[in-house]
Length: 245
Image 1 (tube, helix red, strand yellow):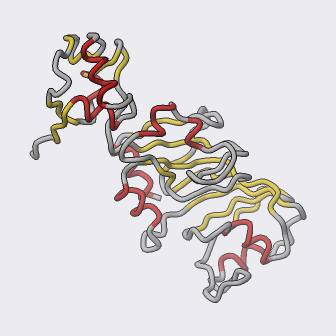
Image 2 (cartoon, helix red, strand yellow):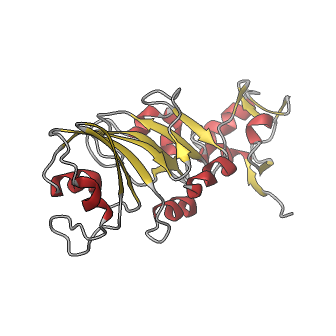
């Protein structure tokens, strides 16, 4: 078994967003930081960076945030953006304020546009992020779409054909599966992640998406008890279920 990474306490807590190293040193000097119940006296003490760190290390009696790698499952609400740079409310504004300055930084695994809700993964694990979005993986993503006009009955065959072309592109889409839920509602499973793909697919067959919600990525399903704007931390094993779909 490999030895865990060791890090200076002040650097570790600064990377977790608890302030500058000087801020952390002040917390230690004030007896605010404990390890297994005992106050830490030296901000330069080496700490083992393990997944169970919050069980041991506390600030003012509150367990510290999990160290990297951190993987979150979020219920993205409507009206927020996934980009760090776009104007308006961002998904990162829904997280604890200190998480916005974690190092490494948190990023969404792919994006949902402002007018799309549902399951979104957020992580500081670059390897995990790239494995999920890699075109070679074909991780399935399931969306529930509400449409402006009634379905004609021809959409399923068009989406499954593997020949459907999106406007402005010269490569056909991979086959996708459509499940009709109602006259103007359908569930669509895709294995690519092209720009605004679901909306553009319905536009290609003469319809318009007025509501879009992502229900699943691979083997990860949006929990029914996770409300819009809420998130959960996934264990490494739970996160790997994304590749089981």
